[in-house]
Picture 1 (tube, rainbow, N blue to C red):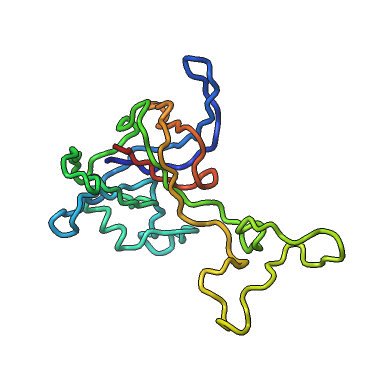
Picture 2 (cartoon, rainbow, N blue to C red; picture 1 turned 120 degrees about the vertical axis):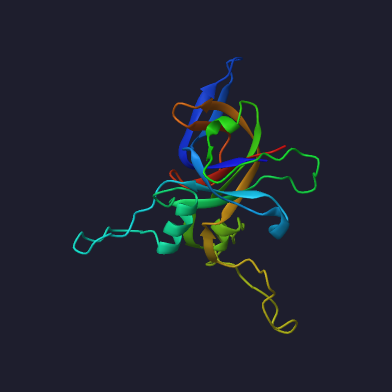
Length: 226
């Protein structure tokens, strides 16, 4: 199993050889440097740490002005130098190489400093994409949990309220896991069994059939299945 870190560009449509219209998510995945390689003897599995983008660096001399926004820490700078990088990646993600429960599967070999590009995938590959869903703020149970709500007529005034959340006699408390209003979205989500429809190596683009979690510009991890 191998993967790559990229950013979701948006959705589009392509047409295959049979003339069928296929909705696709476009993912831009620039070459990912291998920042670190795990030791299977210590952690029990083989994985690589991939980087994406570049972080802002802190000022080298006084009086140069302080760059705005996120700046790489000294620990991140030292970690990147071990991989031969002058600038620490903006995003770091760990990708497991061996398949759990399949000891016979061939495990690819990577060294620190190697580059992982979109050509590790091919048209027809089955992948899973992990991203962060869109945050929707504080929402009620109708939108958050797809509740039906109350009647809209006959004097009812509790159209979108949750109603009773538990009896007062027994158990005299609210059961854990009760569906209540709260923060909706902004959660990690993995969409599995997606097909790679097109690879653009010149522009570092991957076209994946269907939709994936996240907003345009969000960080996603594409991993090959099988």
